[in-house]
Length: 61
Ligand code: SF4
Ligand code: SF4
Image (cartoon, rainbow, N blue to C red; front, side, top):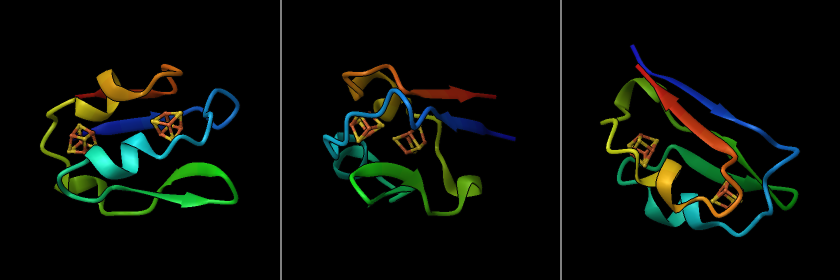
């Protein structure tokens, strides 16, 4: 069970998470990232977490 949190207040809208997630969990919506894919497909690589310049993403198991 993976729990992904995305703090929209911290998100700077850079799109890095959209480009870096191998299973396309994220998409952009109105200048902010949102979780749009199936979280159950997350492989817990934590690329999104480490790549986000705003520390807006937390991936927890
Ligand atoms: S990488 Fe971080 S700051 Fe950039 S769009 Fe994704 S959540 Fe927002
Ligand atoms: S941990 Fe990896 S697979 Fe999961 S949402 Fe982040 S980039 Fe995607």
